[in-house]
Amino acid sequence: MAHTLFLTSADETPLTLIRNFLKSVLQTESVQAVLVPAKLLPSDTLMPHLISDPDLLAGADPLSPVFPLNASRMAAKLSVKPVQGKIAMVLRPCEIRALVELEKLKQANLENCLLIGADCMGAVSAKDHTNMDPPENFSPPKEENLAPACRACEHFVPENTDITIGLFGITPKETIMLQAGTDAGMTLLKKIAKDTGRQFTEDASERQTAVAEKLKQRIGYRDAMFAATRQALDSPENFARYFERCINCYNCRVACPVCYCRECVFNTDVFDHAPYRYVQWARRKGAIRMPADTVFYHMTRLAHMSLSCVGCGQCSNACPNDIPVMEVFRTTAFDVQRAFDYEAGRDRDDPLPLSVFKETEFTDIVGIESGPTESAGTGNNP
Amino acid sequence: MTQAHHPLIIAFVCNWCTYTAADLAGTSRLAYPENIRLIRVMCTGMVDPQYIIKAFLEGADMVLVSGCHPGDCHYINGNYKARRRIKLLKEILPRIGIEKERLKLTWIGASDGIQFSKTMQELVVQAKKLGPNPVNTQSVR
Image (tube, rainbow over all chains, first blue to last red; front, top):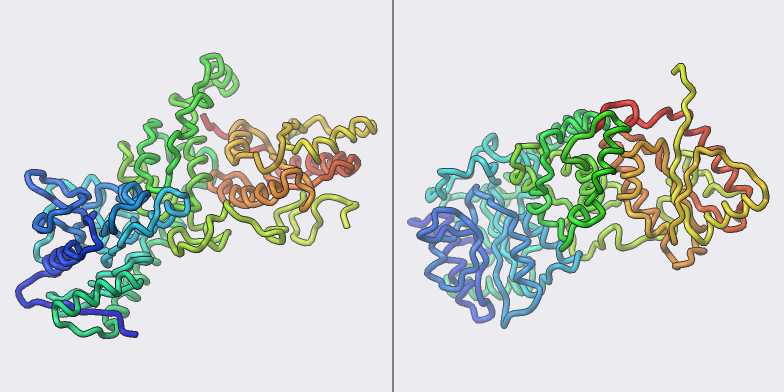
């Protein structure tokens, strides 16, 4: 069944069309408020806002290349208990994927959300945010100006949405595409179709072509980045050197949308070592780097979070010393998720790999021989 | 290498099976190499990946996690969960240049005293073949 609407207006940009669309979303009875990136006076900075006044949606800008934080954390916070009706949430595809992971980690409930995602134009690095105005005349940022995470991102079309706003390959430039992904989204679109007098159609083939082209470009960049990262991180020494500017501020952990523990083990007594321990370590190695445990911290975060990493790049944005953290996580996450045939944020029904097991799986890693045919290291087991 | 390499192997063994097997090996007067340091845990399912990372970062040449045979876990399925965590770590350790082969998982039942001793001997042979953990030979401070 056709579930796609095209909205067009000769004197409006895609951004104003989206703002008007969000207004009609907010005016539906079941929607209490809209969570959307916005620049509301007198503030000069784009940040997620929970907006209940339709007039203030004039400041909403989900197309901005400014990406101050991964809003999935805010979305999760708003979703854990029902309000009367739903909260519409306009999120980037990586934010939605992180939200899906947070739901699996029992930190969010998507039943209370109406998820709206637009084709993602990518974001610039945090340090390039300054003096960035929302593009009133809609033109996506150039690929080479995007943050590395975005340049390597193959998930620029939102998944798991109630409504997707399509922009890629859509002409003329005063047009946006609205596509329903769920029944809730369809109900809303039907109302908009009625109000605007538009007819439902099929997806635009131009969009598919544009998406395929972009995907190819992104995968090319991504694979080159993977290869470079694997090569750079091939020994303990090189790993330590990669993170040598790390000051253990843990900003990457705070910025990470899926690093969800209320109390991180690195903040507990476990890492509150007594002075004599440091001296012992220093004696054994001649010297130890202070702050200590930097390699341990990043390795642990890889073990804890790489299965749920969505590659949003906020860890790199958060680093005060410009360590390319995202590259390490994205590369490792790719290997790890592939090993479990899992992809973070792909499907709400895929269980977290460490929350389940099968009796017959991974038998090749059991035993002290390397071959997969060896038994479990016991001579007398039937 | 001019000096013989004396590998250090950290073994996380479950209370109900592999530790009991080690105990049996001891009471049966079966020797196993002194390169192994046993750490008794209640179940392999409680071995946090952090323990293993820490062991490697502190210079262990190999880490063994050993528990009950499938179906024999005292806590029903801790060993299956451990297997998934080992799988995860085997993908992560190469990022820091530690070979997957340095991390091992075995099931050794409580009555497998002989098997325990044999496994430990074989591990030392493999650890010698692998050579020292690069953490020990490089400047990682």
